[in-house]
Length: 162
Image (cartoon, rainbow, N blue to C red):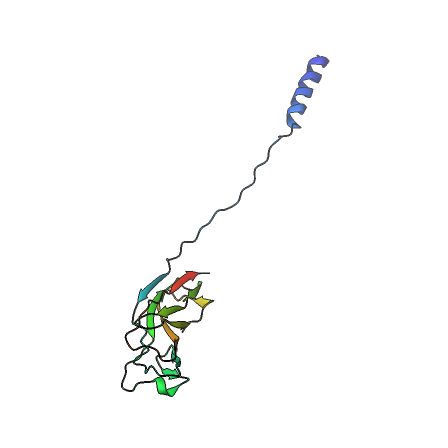
């Protein structure tokens, strides 16, 4: 009887002290969906009428739509000028960037380079969840003795979450 009790006790205690060769851990998973960033066209950038003279120079339209120049002989009177405008909608409190590569206006004569400026800055712009007005001004380099005619180009504005 002692042998049976001892064997039974050995089997029971062996089962109690047996260790598993695996363990399990857990973690939570989460995702946050935000609205896609959007940009909507508004008004076009217009440098207005410019007099092609022997000196040439730079004509600037500020993001507020104000025209200035480094050569007053370039500016023709009685002309409409304006900054370009866009509406940007980005998720509230999320940062985004604005990229506007330079272009050239082309027409009858030599191409004229244009660089651009954003009213919202270029990086770290904070979305509001509502439409934000983005004005684009630019600086046009008028070549000396620029040929008369209409010169055009297309501004491409890219906004992207950072």
